[in-house]
Length: 145
Image (cartoon, rainbow, N blue to C red; front, side):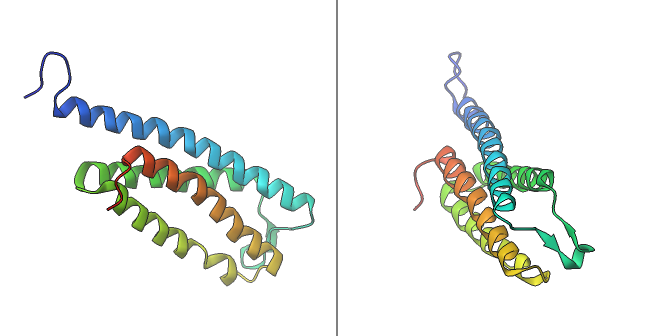
C-alpha cells in the first residue's frame, strides 16, 4: 500500500525510473560530446573516416553525434526494462551492455575501411561505453551480484 507520504513501493519505483531517465539523458549527452570531440581530434590527426562499403564517403562529425545518441538511448531503454523486470537490474545490465559493446566492435573491421579508421571507430565505441555503462549501472543500484 502506498502511504500518504509517498514512500510506498510505487513511489520508490517511480523515483528509480526518474533517476535512471535523468542519469541516462545526462550520460547520453556526455557520450555524444566525447565521441564527437574524439572524432574531431582524430580527423585533425589525419584519420579520414572513409567507409568504402558506404560509397567511399567519409562519416561526418554529426554522424558520430547522432549514432552515439541513438544507441545510448537504446541503452537507457534496456536499463529501464531491466529495472522494471529484473531482480538484479544492475548485474543484468552490465552483462547485456558489455556483450552488445563487444558485438559493436566487429563492424568497423568488416566494412573495408583503413586500419586507422577501424581502430579509431572501435576506440570511439569504447569511449561511449565507458561513459554509459558505469553511469547507468550506478543508477540501477550498486549491487552487481
